[in-house]
Amino acid sequence: MTTSAPSTSLQWREDVLPGFQQAALGEATLVRSTSRPPAPRGVVLHVHGYNDYFFHSHVANRLLDDGFVSYAVDLRRAGRSLREGDIPHFMTDVAEPGEDVAAAAAMVADLEPGLPIAVHAHSTGALTTLVRLHTHGPGPVAALALNSPYLGSVPSWRLRLGNRALPGIARRRPLSIVSSGPSWYATHLLASEGGRWEYDTRWKRPDGLPVRAAWLAAVVRAQRQVARGLHLEIPVLAARAGAGGPDSPDNPLLDAQDTIVDVEAISRLAPRLGRDTELLVVPDAVHDLALSDTTPRERYLSELSAWLDRALPPAERPGA
Image (tube, rainbow, N blue to C red; front, side, top):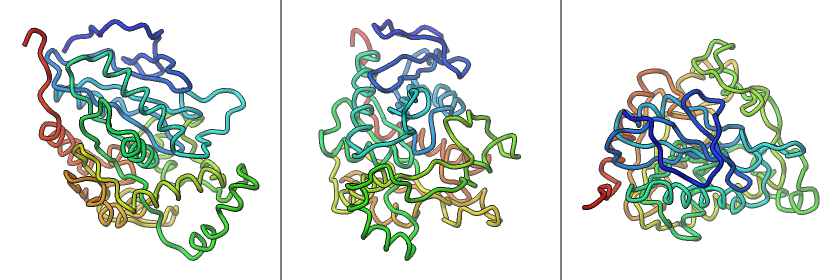
């Protein structure tokens, strides 16, 4: 590998992750690995989910070994982009963070001319990216990999009752907290709690991040739009864990289930995303497939790399 990177007018500086740089991109933050494969086959742009940010250096390094350049975007009011006075992750429409995804993809296209771009988006970030690419077209994005997209919540009477009242609450009191509590999923991942991963607990909170009415209403609207069908014109990979379960410290399969989203909704809705959609089910995986235990994580990253090989067009070599 090499450590050279293309020049840019962005003001790059050292990132919190060793071997990475960051630069402000409007209200968002663009992150890139300083290492590059000698003959890149493409670029992967990572998009995080709710109560989350990019800390997945192991994913970037694995894709680097497979020939891909890695970038990531921390969306507005999240992670590196969180500013004093911000309500973390707050939005009134998925179009708001969708603008950040589009800006990051456009900047990466300028930075990496000739290299095809795939977006690798997780959970709510995947939902946001789906709606953005459907509404505005794929632009420079040639392929879309969805890591446990938030296409549906686990059904419950509370959710059904809440959804009836939600639009009115979101209009009258958009900042109202409609759900709160610890994230046992995030807690279980954290190294200091016996998990496998080190992350900044200011940006991914084990104590959870309160869900506000306007945010949830925006998510529900976006999920309904996806359910009606999107018909994207680019290849799509929809990847999910093998099983779902409760986000509870009493769940003995907390490390082998998705305890955040409805995994069956992903299988049910995947065919509605586009004409070229593949479904990938990863047994024993957690919500963020790339943070699973060794065997499911390796399965996911291997399948992701193989899909990128199939889905992305060849890179344009200089002088070709």
